[in-house]
Image (cartoon, rainbow, N blue to C red; front, side, top):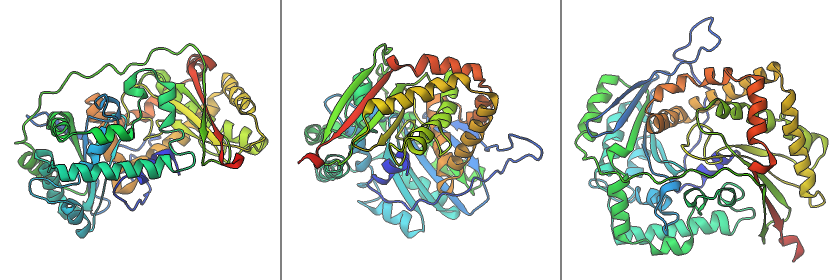
Length: 460
């Protein structure tokens, strides 16, 4: 299970995850890059970004509402507040009482979920196609007005604190490395604080904080809605205007500076884990900026180094050395390389045998990186096949939720959801020379952070 799915499984609502093969409604015979996602994009007068993507393969529809508020820019001294608020959004609205939203979706044969990420908080429903209007109405209802009460806040503070205890504090390798590494590798508080939330900060949240947060960030001009699946566009437009068009926009605060300073010295940290019975290590390198040639090169480097049993790190650390049974890694452990909008890390991690020194593992990492200097076009062609397969899996996953995710993110971050159809071409522009340049500039030891987990359970 990858880190994205691990995090989704921690959400307060359980969703049956069915990964479907990617469909290709825009397929053109004889074209090597045949997949094309239908995209219609526009904005309401109140600033709400709307993306429609028809796919009549199955009689289902996805409604996904994304708010441009995530872990990074939650208030200082309120760590975990963005995640706490995600829970609050299921506590009732103007016309739906507590859990009535959930019951309404499930009784109509649908599934739903919500999550908090670095740069957004999202909510989605997968419904039978004829229930599109119901889903749109319900999402608009809670955007218009949330049931913000002390009872709901106190209840959800307890739920989130228990979630932290179950998933992090009382788990071996809890928070490693998805939650831990950003705190060690980054310097800017917005990127480096405890996203899940310190228990004291969660306790100190006040009702007025929740009300202000909602009125500030859960406004239509800070949101995008994507609708994917079996629907009629004109009908969908009519309902979106009817239910969302009258919601007032908000005065949005200036976005904080989330830039990270350049790293020019290797950082190494050790974390004791009282519950772990084997050591673990994670290695993280700061990423290039999004949408640059080096960014796309890192996507292919990720495929070459850590994705799949043919990757260099798997071959060296598992097959050749036998240090571990598996290696995890990637860009953005709380999603994928496309659905974030700020500083990011490329990371690899593994749990390994106690008799293997960390430096032996790092030696294999360094050797794998050095081998990128000899990368060929044939190597890149294979990496493109892998990343193309991964992209298609994502776009077709969970009844179209993966597609809705990218469309909403590209609307929020780039004001251009149609760039979903340009991704393949960007990867194909990467040459062996760009790979070598990117590896030299970003996969240097002075640009990395090493986090070692030292087990204590076996020593007690």
